[in-house]
Length: 332
Image (cartoon, rainbow, N blue to C red; front, side):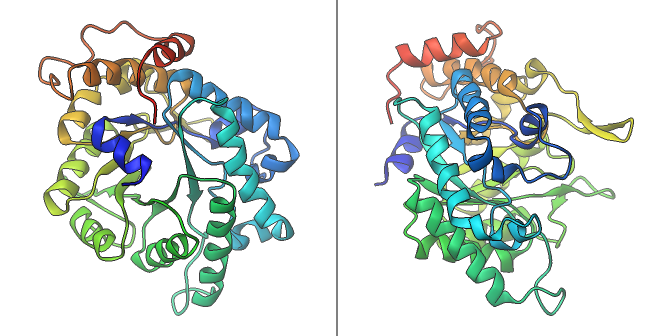
C-alpha cells in the first residue's frame, strides 16, 4: 500500500488552507500569476507553506492550481510550465524541513469549456494536464490532487494524465454548490455527490474529495462526506470554506473565525473523513485550531466525537501545534 493511503487508513491527516489569499497578502497583485512565484519569489511561497506546517499540516498542496499550459499562457508564462510545476512540488517538500509530510501536486481547472460547448479542443486539455502531471511527479509529489472540478469530462482527462505520469495516488476533488431551491448540492454542471463518487471509482481515483463551492462550509462538507461514503468505499478528503462569503467594498471576504470553523470538525470526523483541510478564507490560524481538535480525535482512536472532540483542547497557536507534532509519533 502507498505510504499516503497507509497513513490515512491509520489516522486522519490534516491538510493546509487557502493559498491565493495568502499570496495576495504577501504582495501578489489582483489578477497576477501566483504560480509564477514558485520561480520568481520562491521564498514567499515557502514562507506561506512553512506557516501551514507550523500550524500542523500533514499534507501540503502545491502552488500549482492554475499551472497548466492553458492557464499559464494567459499570463505569458507558457514557456515555464514544467519549471513552475516542478518547483511547486519541490517548495512544498522543502517546507517540511526534513520532517514527515505529504506533498499533493495540484491540478486545477483549465478555466474554460471544451468543444463543442467552448473553444478549447479536448486534445489541448489532454496535453496540458499530461504536461503538468509529469512535472509534478518529477518534482517529487506524493500524490496528484485534481481539484475544484465541476465537469466529469475534465476530471476524467486529469485523472488519466496523473495516472499516465505515474502518480502514486490520485485524488479527485469536486466543487459542489448549495442549491437555492432545495437543501441539496450539485456542481455547476449538475453533478451530484453520488454520481461524482461513482465516477471517481470507475476512473481509478484513490481518494474521493470535495473542496470549495458555494455554500460548502463544515456542516455541508460533512453531509457530502456521508453521501460519498454511502456510495463508494474510497477514503474521503474534505476542504470546506471558512464559512459563507460576504461582499464588502467590492471584495469577497470570509469572516468565520478559526474557533467557529473548528466547531464543525467533530461532525466532519464522525462522517468518516480521512483528510481534512480548508479552502477559501482559511488561514494558518484555522489549520492550527483544526490540528488541536484532530489531535484530540486521534488520541481517542477516532472515537469520541459525540462527547466533543474539541472540548478538552485549548485554542492553539501555530507554534504550539508544531511542538505537539514534533513530540507525536505520526511519522508518515
